[in-house]
Image 1 (tube, rainbow, N blue to C red):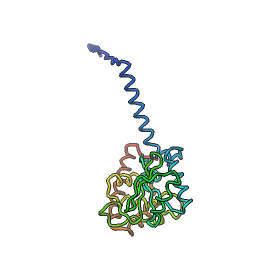
Image 2: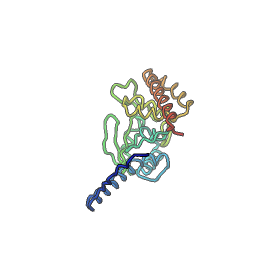
Image 3: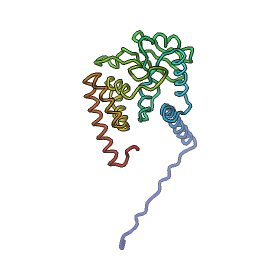
Image 4: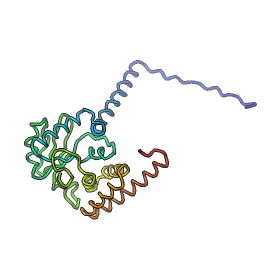
Length: 237
């Protein structure tokens, strides 16, 4: 512009010694390793990547078929299965009340260690460094939950190892009372087909009135979030 003068700028160069550069490099690599490890659960479910989660699931499958113990996969892996890549560091499994003792007894034969055996049935197994949390039929997701946890058959698993049905997974998440689980439900609802959610709602309505009220609330939140994401151009395909 006429009469204007360019204001000179001074570049500031940051000089790091080799020790600082090496330390930062190590920290970056460590952070990348943590992120990579944290997403193994997602890659195991969505891409069938061979890693510590698929190894644990393979041995759970062997145990289930070998001993005739139906096992339903619930929790964070269920969220991934239904479209929300929620990185998790453990595996939650639903087991029938009548099979809890047998599960703990035979687990070591299939590569598992019994880390915790509880009278209530909330056992904990480990497979390498993967924790497997047993969600027992007849237990409660929280002390004040109005219903008890259904067994694998009601969760849609009659035999072998498989993911709980969408409606069964939703029932468990709605009964937990945890904010994190509500967030998972909202994210899955944003991905799920309308017909599947309608069928799930009909089922939930038969379980408990408070659950269907929460279902409707979270569905509304999911719709609002989805609409906002579409407006911003960030909606998932």
